[in-house]
Length: 452
Image 1 (spheres, rainbow, N blue to C red):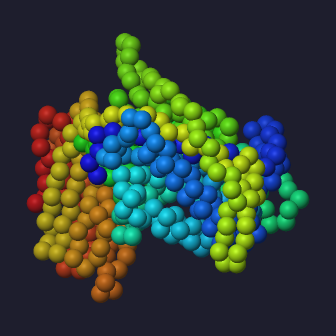
Image 2 (cartoon, rainbow, N blue to C red):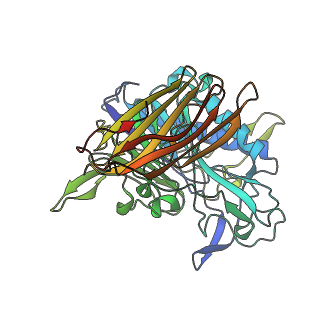
Image 3 (cartoon, rainbow, N blue to C red):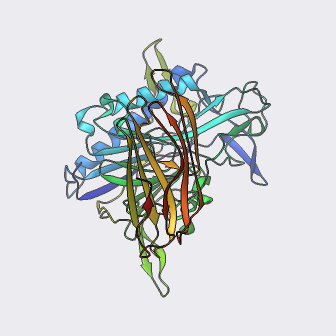
C-alpha cells in the first residue's frame, strides 16, 4: 500500500443498551437490542455497516476538492457494534460474523481502506461460576480478505468495565456483568504488545506498511500499551486507534511517535476525535493537537431487508438511537516511520544442521540492557516465527513424535560479564546443557562471549 495521505472516517452511532441506568460506575439496568436469531442479527448488523461504508464512499466521491485514490481511508465503528440480543454471541456465531465482514470488504474497490468493525463480544461457558467473555476488535485491510488472514488483525480487550454489561435484567439468558470475566490479561513488559500472530490479541501490529496500535475503551484509559513499550529498532507506532463506548482519548496513554495520529470513535455519547501528537515545553512533553471535527452525514434509516427467510428489520431493533452518521475528516499527511531509539545485538547459534537459535539482546536509548528474545528454527517443528521471552520452558513433540524440550533462563555472568543465558536443550539430534553466552548490561563494554 503506497499512500501519502490518510483520511479518518468515524461511524458515529450509539451502541449502548436501550435506556441504560448508571450507578457507582456500573450499569444496573438497560436492554440489549437485537434479533432472536443470532445469525440473522449478525446479517442485519453487517447490512447496516455496509450501508455506512457505502455512505462514506459516496461522501468521498462528492467531496471538493476530490480525495486522491491513493489516500488511505480508515473507517472505524465504536465498541459493541456486534453483541446481539443477549449481550454477547457464542464463539461459532462470532466466527460467522468475521467471515461475513471479511467478505463485505473483499472486493478490489476497497483497496486503500482499513476497517475497524467496532468490537465483537462473545462468551464461552467454563467450569467456573463465571463464563469467559471475549470483547475484541477486528481490523481488516480492504481488498485482500479473500487471501486469508494476511490482511486481518484481532486485538483483545483485557479489562472489564462496570458499564460493559448490564448487572440485572428481567430477560432470562441475558449476559450480566457479574456472570462473566474477561480473559486473563497478558504479562506487561517491553515488547509484549507486539503481535507475532495475526489473531494473537496484542495491541501493536503492522498492516499495509504502517505500524498501528489499538486499545478498546478501558484498556486505553488504563494505559495498557504504555506498560509494554516497543523494542529498540522497531518502527514506532504511527497511528493509534481507540474504539470505545464511554471513553475519550487520554493524554497519558499516548503511544505514538511524535507527529503520530490518534483516532477515537465512541459509541457512548462522547463523539469522535482525531488528534496529532506534538511535543512542546522543557522538558519536552507530548500534547494532543485536535483536528476539527466536521459535520456528519446521516446514514439512511430505511429498513434492513433479510433474505432467508425474508424479513424487514427496523434500525431501532438493533440500535436504540437509530443508524447514526458518517463523520469524514479531511485528508492528513500520515506520519513517517521512525525507529524506536536504542540498539539490538543479534547472536546466531547454528547449534546443529537442523537447529538454529537467533538471540536478540535489546538495549534502550541510554544503552542499558532491557530485554532478551530468542527465535528457534527446527526442521522437524514449526515455531511460526515466534520471538520467545526469557525465561523459556518449552516441552512438546515434533512431527515424528520425538521429544523437544528447551529451557532457558538468565543467570549471573562470570569473568567480568554481567549476565549469562543458561540452557538445557534436548531435541532430536542435539543435546546441550550449560551457558550459551555471557553479555554485559550496557553497550560499549564489549561483545558477548558465546559457546560457539
